[in-house]
Image (cartoon, rainbow, N blue to C red; front, side):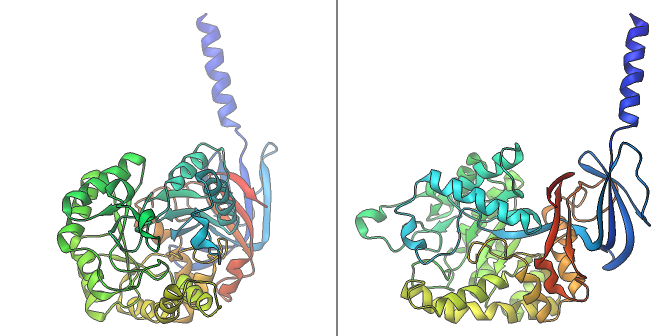
Amino acid sequence: MRKIILSGIALLFSICAFAQKTYIHAGKLVDVRNQKVLIEQTIVIEGEKIVSVSAGYQNPGSEDSTIDLKGSTVMPGLMDMHVHIEGETSPTRYIDGFRENEADVAFKSIHFAEKTIMAGFTTVRDLGGSGVNISLRNAINSGKVIGPRIYTAGKSIAPTGGHADPTNGMKRDLMGDPGPDDGVINGPYEARKAVRQQVKYGADLIKVTATGGVLSVARDGSAPQFAQDELDAVVQTANDFGIMVAAHAHGDEGMQRAINAGVTSIEHGTMMSEETMDLMIEKGGWLVPTVTAGMSAAAYGEIPGYYPPVVAEKARRIGPQIQATFGKAYEKGVKIAFGTDAGVFPHGENYREFIYMTEVGMPNLEAIKSATLTNAIFLGIEDKLGTLEAGKLADIIAVSGNPEQDITVMKDVVFVMKEGKVIKQ
């Protein structure tokens, strides 16, 4: 019996020693840590992890497989820190909520998730939906659905009548009086309950709408919407759970309240003053600029009937300001996390953010770093993702052309691998 056991152990070790590996031959490879493009590299993958990255085209073993990307530029899987995976912009968006069931939203979200990962984004942060986003995350994690790794806020938290109050624009008998269970709060006690409720539902983080918004059917798009004690209660409660808080904010006063409360990130930051930029640097906060959303909303606002009139006016006025503000914040030294607000524009067009970022001064490879290593640091997962290095999960993409010379090639994703599994080739 002892000999049989020892023979079995020896066989097991023998099988492990000759486990099949995948060799990727990369014509160019983006070293995001050092912001350099390396030539003729080999990435060796075993299971879900990278085991080595080396110069030259290494020869695989007889049991191994090879992926030829000699004509492409290879880089880590991209990360978008602001998407809305449940929906997508449409002229019918404001009535779809009265016609669609939760199942309809769920089936659409599967399509949007696939578009996202096929565009090279293997990790996203979903910042607000109905709760379908939580189920979608679970379905992707269990392998039932193809899509990016999702960190989700579940339902955004708003004050009554604020951006993310789901009953804005309805007639009074449909408005009702949504409360903390629906992500609508008034006062610090309800703020605590709303955070705990989202955690109970399965949220990975919390999102608050610290100011008015552009696309909600509400008059104001920039004024502060929470009192300081309400924001303090949200952040303190989230901190107790060990999760971050993202704050949607266009207006400056609302941003300052959110930063002073201790939020991790400001989303959009459209009208951010230099004083607020200094405060962000002092407090260590991050800006997720979502320039693509602002530019897209402004363009849609010019199309007659695309948005309700109250939304169209805000979109035309507020949207175009985001790019310039991002440029000033970047130059001043505010920490930047790549995020687009995909869903405000079609999913799969997330690459447009690279173009807008580089137009106002961010170098091409630094923009790519913001969507890879920087975002991994932002999420606290840099030990697993963000670079192509031994021991990291094999989230790998490739594009045609050289993004160091032409950032627009980021739209031409020809290969996607997530955790060692080829999604697109």
